[in-house]
Image 1 (tube, rainbow, N blue to C red):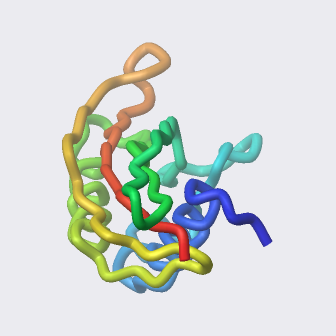
Image 2 (cartoon, rainbow, N blue to C red; image 1 turned 180 degrees about the horizontal axis):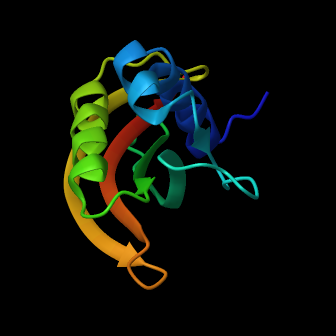
Length: 136
């Protein structure tokens, strides 16, 4: 099993999001991907960029992660993506998640950004989070 804080945190976040019936209904299934499969029907979620930096102290090894969860929609406008994004923030911001081999010190939503892709066909909202963890 991976000890990478990025992989461990993503695994737990995926499980948290997939277990929420309201979010799964809004997505039309537990469509949470690292990379969307060919022909994936929107709306769906993507784990996008992630960065990791050392957050160790003299007494413990730690990591700070900045990561993005993206909501992709094909509805006109950004209302669907924003609504789903709000659900994700409500589920993850300050969530007391239990990680394998790590202790989650803090998980906070930092920012959201909407945009259009592919000639306006896809609406997307990128939700940026900051997490700090300590190795057990």
